[in-house]
Length: 280
Ligand code: HEM
Ligand SMILES: N[C@@H](CC(=O)c1ccccc1NC=O)C(=O)O
Image (cartoon, rainbow, N blue to C red):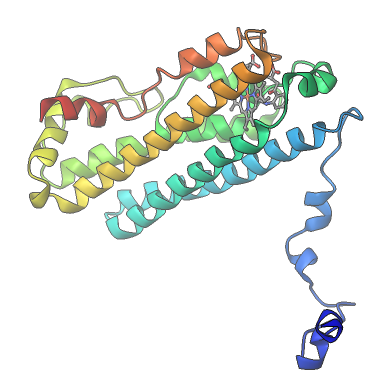
């Protein structure tokens, strides 16, 4: 027993000397990552709050990377890789959704111990979250303003608005595959949020009525529905956790709090993919 506990893996070759060699921590830059938790108070739960947000931001970074790859794959008609990547984005959202279970263990009283120290900072100012919304197609320009003072981030968000969204690319793909999609939608000004279009519903109806004629397209569309499904769950978990922790208090970011977040539950990313179901 104690022999096993004191077993020395170097006897079978485990490297032990990293003086001058790249180690695990070096490769992952752990000094930076693990040195970036700086609580502003002695409140026990502030560490939970910080790590919850930092890990969410890391997953969002990966989501942005993958949504970009999925969009490029759709644009170049590589649908197998696109589906693989979109499935990964949904799994990332699942990860973000599960994380709420950890944060929910923080009681309203625990949160009051450090909330005042947050000042006016808020998730509302998460540029990566905005980037995800913009890439998926929810393009409210007002949300750029909190980033006006950081030129690098402002440029990234503005640049994203010049590109067709993931949904724009899916509609263009459908057109290339012989589905009737309205010309006005395909050549729209992509800077703004796409408006619900009867013509697009009719286009998706052709696909959903005969999936066997459009398998790949149908599967891409269903991957988008999956993604929006997970995104909705994220918004719902957020507003529920917020109500549980701060009730109806105003948000530190200045909005009405839960009232604002409930309003955001109405946002639809791929509206016709939901409407088409009524038509079948
Ligand atoms: C106790 C935990 C939390 C509370 C009380 C809370 C509260 C709020 C409130 C009240 C808002 C509205 C804006 C404002 O006026 O501040 C907001 C927005 C936001 N929060 Fe949280 N939040 C919490 C956790 C999180 C976590 C873990 C994330 C993950 C990154 C997050 C991300 C966001 C984002 C992205 C927005 C903007 C949403 C939008 O504009 O649609 N929040 N939050
Ligand atoms: N808006 C929150 C504060 C908050 O949650 C927050 C503050 C700083 C960094 C991230 C945050 N998370 C999400 O909004 C509140 O009103 O309590």
